Length: 351
Length: 267
Image 1 (spheres, rainbow over the protein chains, first blue to last red):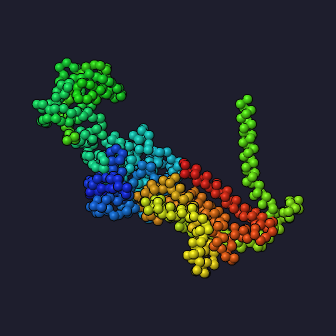
Image 2 (image 1 turned 90 degrees about the horizontal axis):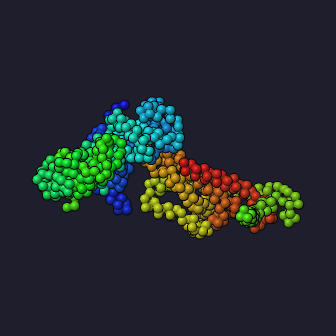
Image 3 (image 1 turned 30 degrees about the horizontal axis):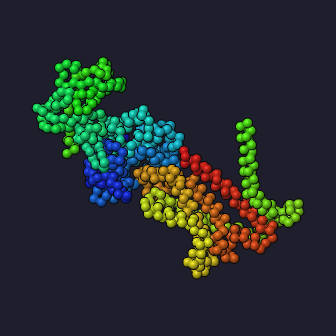
């Protein structure tokens, strides 16, 4: 059931100051394309949920902020007339209705006849894999089942945009991972414009066509998962997404001068720089003849790889990933090799 | 040794509890038995009779009917005003809502006599209104409304009605539709508990009613006071018996529903 109901969403200068004076959102501008899945990612209190609620119509932006769906200003339109689908963290399923009635509620509101409703509900039940639960009460469902019902109910109305507020947070880890891939498949199948709020970077990477990293009510960076991961524009993004070594050093003759040796850079820089190196882009070599060397301080084996902490190479201990078969123990001297293209220079934020 | 002492302490505590319970229950039992005794001063051995109850019925049937009329009308008004008010205050409210809630709750802290006096001062001159049972209804609504609103707000908090409301809104339901389809059905235990409380309070209300009534608009508790003052003790007691028979099932039902509502909300 490919839908053609997706809209473009334009967030124009939306800020939010709550009645008690708290500034939840600085003026934010963001364009979301038709059919795109955008993930709003950030720690708690970064304004991501507030932004979602403004797009949904559950909150009003401060004066001056506008929300446009397909270039039509909907800022003053209440949520019930925005034709959005919403999945809440607590699901907000109606305990007084059966699963089928929950899924069909939006259709009933839209005055769709009972016979057609039954057909549509059956489609959604099949799509979300909850066959056999149609006549259950909500309190007879498990967490994962509730999540699926909430999703089915939200997409039943063929919304212009699907809004998801931490929909997997209430579930345990194994179930979360399974539902994440189901959700991914569903979003691709529907081809719907989706805005997804989470604090879980793995979820954001897996689901987002584009990730908007937020911090203190502002957008820290927006880009594809690869851009965000490989080319973070600031220290916050670098450290929030994945593991990162942030190294401060002087650049001399096209290379970083580190306590443990030299680290060549791809693009010419000069003076004091801040650089980011991902643990997996550092290769462990023999110490003799290596351009950069250090001493292994700790080894933690995590199954698919091992994470080393190497002292003495840079101004602070470096996290380094080594293959899981590599033989190394704490105290060993090792050489470190980093491809120049894997070193990312960041703006120095102290100045 | 220890067990002996524990047992002695338990026995003493148990006896004391029974004593306190008896102190509270005996007057009620005495009063009810007096209502079915031939002659109270000669005691139960003078024989049992329902004559006094019949006499109460002859004399005061209208007050009983009026009490039920007032109680049910009070319930209707508090439901129609109180439940939407609770919704507005809890779901849509801000700082103003807190203030409004406090104002609605104020009658709890003000003596019924003072409320009645205020009503008499304000509306006592509208003589048709003053003479009708509607005047008493107004007093009862002022007195019982906070109980309904509080009870409904309590269940709203327990079932996280704000999120339910937002969920229904996201599916396209306008406020009135959400209220009807989602809010009220899920708040039913709280509404039921509030309703029973309102009916019980209204049936037993004396302070306000005593000030507001006219000889033609007596309610049951006012009739009771009247019978205590001017009738044989047996008649007054029989009247008390009638009152108990009416109010106790309501009290029991209130407890049952309150427990049921609490369990439901806890799930």
